[in-house]
Image 1 (tube, rainbow, N blue to C red):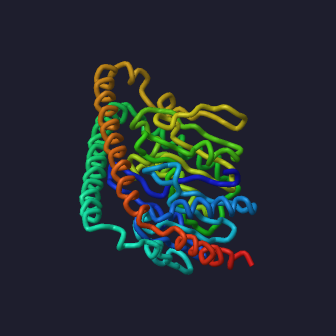
Image 2: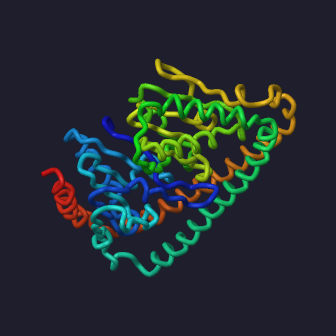
Image 3: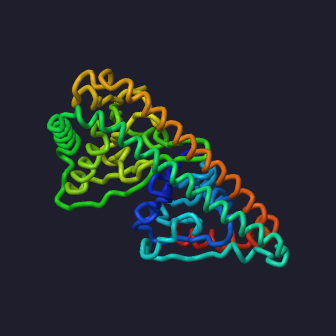
Length: 362
């Protein structure tokens, strides 16, 4: 998909299901919300719509499903300022976000008579199992986060916070000088990645491909990477500099990347599970471990850190396996509804949605 930007706006996190749609879809003229059970063709419809917009030369923002990253939960037609989203996946919090919100019911294509009482019973059972699989995944992520906190402790104790703050102030000055204006702005909040049934997945390379400058932050847990990004984001907002604020898909209270479109610059936490290295002009490394931490911290605590890392990795694997179970259960639920859906009715919804979308291009 050329001319497309790829994101997530919901995540399976250590804090449970987390939604950023309210910020991601803020300021649109119109949002088309597709309602109806899973398996009634919403995601396929959204993908087809994205492809036809791209074919006509428009820029599309694609919001992927953290359960199946190759499927779309929603899109924004950037130039038209119109969003389309699966109402089941956006946390139901889009009231007042756009100028106008229209709902389309894919459930009307469902022939309820063809779902037997027995099937309904099975669907209910599966839905309970799905809730259970998700809550087990969230529990495992929450435990992994607590283990991660133990890991951070070793480094926080060796951290020179004055040095870290100096690095932050230097960056603020260097990045923003000459771009400040007197009107504060509000950042746009997104995820660049997600915990999926196949493990961590991210779109960093897609989102930073066109930028002139990329700053790769290296360091250890607790070496001040997220704090640095939070301070940079706050200073950008205060100085009226447009900023996209990317939250960590594992711990949404933490930040992993900022993109400044007008400065053609990204700065991001480039450590596992989204570890990248400079590969072109304009790429540079900012190593927080080297610049703000007591030398030898790794070596001093090597044995304890190995043990913590093992526990952390095991918990993350466990969480991922629960997500894989959720995906399998979700597929079973979908198949019941797909079998009972009259897709010719779904196809009739297409032109209605298309015309709502195209009203804006006239």
